[in-house]
Length: 282
Length: 56
Image (cartoon, rainbow over all chains, first blue to last red; front, side, top):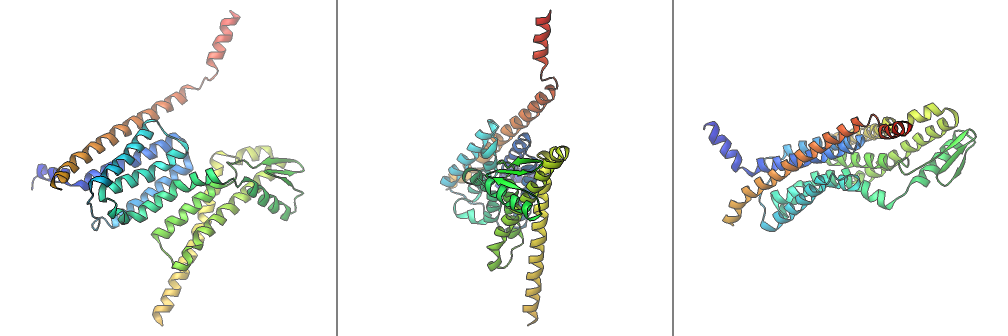
């Protein structure tokens, strides 16, 4: 078989077209996140895309690419919406919705409604990459809760703290816990990482329910510690407060949250392995 | 059914072309807006120029 024949075979193979479409769509999504200057979400998107690539690569030989007319039309409509929003350089909530919508569109185009279950892992991972943050930002305001818990931590550490709504006051100064400081991003990041871990390295069915809850609690506590630090800096050292407030420093706490969750999940996996080895030896 | 199979590859090729065109546009717009950001090194240039004109 010569090179021309090989190229002709590749053009007739729909897998290459689908791969090109999905790669192009995800490149568009990444470019939009880059343009929005959302470094944390950009890093998470890269991580999740690598995970999805790895999952899809493992099952590439077992996938069925048979789609009917109706699912293809729905898939093209979804892709069309993604392209339209991308042309308008969507940002904010719509930007976070684009990776999941485009993957759903391509999955429908590739395998139809019946074949969607082949991609349930990839779709769940992409769903948790963006959709929970949209729902949470629209429905929940956890800033008062974060302020209360941080004030409780300060009181526990022996500070003379006064808390009122979202304000935390110390003798030398105080802070206001705004939406950006409420820790919703850190919580969503640890939650989505927990879903990624559950999909890629599954644990016992009974423990599956608790893993996302632990992730949410870890995210919340790590952010509360950050708010405590900021309150202390605001009262004692303004320069340190400016350095640690916003910008790259805030991502550090997200990373710490993910690391703590990683350690927790690693211990859980170790426990599972031990239990399995005991069961197999019996 | 056979007609659908024949139509499918040109349809995918069409979608692929649209995706590539939008990707190029998004990349160009992103690069362009970065240049705009860089050129805002003198954010108060217009104000300074207006002040100079008024002085003269």
